Length: 134
Image 1 (cartoon, rainbow, N blue to C red):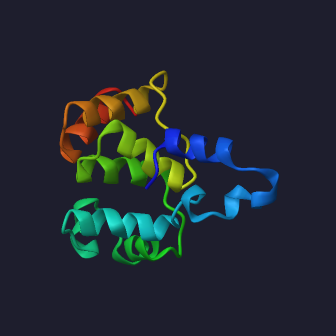
Image 2 (cartoon, helix red, strand yellow; image 1 turned 90 degrees about the vertical axis):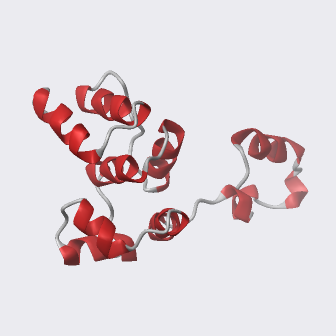
């Protein structure tokens, strides 16, 4: 995967005769379901285990990972914490799934950022959110 700087460089180097840059594979995001499954594969996790850990209904969970349903922002943040993603990885996950990035001025997002930065568990994040009534 190309970095943002590399993509910007490629855009600057193209000419109008090169055709539309957005058709180049380097400028596209993978479909959300493929990205989600890739994250699980990288960590050697199975869907059923993650679905259970997140406390999701089995059918709903499989629909998320198979692309039949669009993941909610809350699901994605909880998944990021469960998988131990860093802040950039979490924002990338949110971006690919077409959700707003974390914004520290929102209390729930600030709690999620804190959990991600401090490597809190999913249970610790849930407790933190409950403490701030979110």
